[in-house]
Amino acid sequence: MNILQALFFPPEQPGGVSSMVPYIQERFNKLGWPMELFSLPRRVRGKGQEPVAFETFDITNYEGNPIVDKYLQTYRDYVWWTKLRIKKSYDIIHAHHPISALVMKQLYPDTPLVMTIHSSFERELILNGKIIEGGMEHRFLTAIYGELEAKADRILTPSESFRSYLKPYVKDADRIQIIPNGFDEKRFKPISHENAVVQLITVCRLVPAKGLDVLLHACAELKARGHNFVLHIIGDGPSRQELEQLAIELNLYDDIIFYGYMLHPEEFMPFFDVFVLPSRAEAFGSVFAEAALCWLALIGTNVGGIAEQIDDGVNGLLVEPENPTALCNALEKVVSDQDYRYNMARAAWNKAKKVYSLQRVIAQLKQVYTEIQPEPEAAE
Image (cartoon, rainbow, N blue to C red):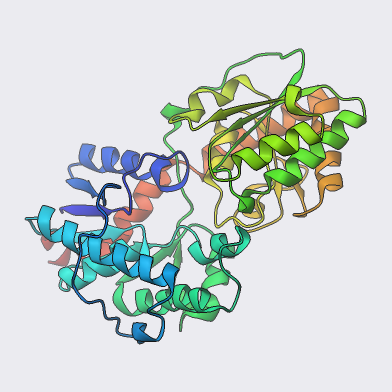
């Protein structure tokens, strides 16, 4: 069975799709199921010219809006690039972005399409202050879910919370199958160590949706309570300058290291003690599972897929979003008690190995693929 994994941009960024799909490809190829990756290079801009039309809603009602027009032009570019580069057929196409899914179904209507919806672009835009809830851009982007439901042979998503999020935008959310993300354990090498000062780490794109402003305020309160720590921030994004300025204003700059973008942060994480990320929304939050596999104590917000990964007080701590004091209290628990921190990290590692193994994902995907495209021997 020849399978194409259709991504959006190349898998360069840490987290999410990039932390999983290339390793899925490697495993399937070893099993004798040929699998290839396809994506749109970032340099391709403004090439596509074909008109775009959807089955379930009229896109002309949204044209003229800058965000919608940019989305549609990216769709055209994906069509142009796909026609230019793909010269063979596949038994199954598994897409990981709405644009790649809809383009593939447009160009290869007879090929079964699996679509994994990993996250909510519109929610991220709202939290980052780019669009307003209920506005034209929000209505357009949520209408895409209904188009995906009409076109895809199978829709997958990584968490129960995100399937619930999709319910208002599709006809039958119960048909959406949950396959939590999985990770290749060989990438993660926990290291036994003792740091004289507790080392906190967060890994994310530096945007408002990740709540790092809340983290900095919590750290300022933690410092005021007399606790020593170092906060390591791995990632880059439009909020970096604002966050660095906030660190200065909160008298935290000497306690924080901004690293910028890093390709393989999992190689770095095992040397630290606590992973913390107070996201305002998260469909799954792959980086929590990655941090758990690095044997770190986890602190996250009670939102989305984070709350499905962390059993509060057992393998991590959950706090409500937008609450620096609650986050500070959680940090204080793990910073001040080494045994508590160690036991929680061990529990996080145990759960991640059991629940978020890549082998489990491979088995579930094999079942999905064979259900929608049985191999000849199985059909007979």
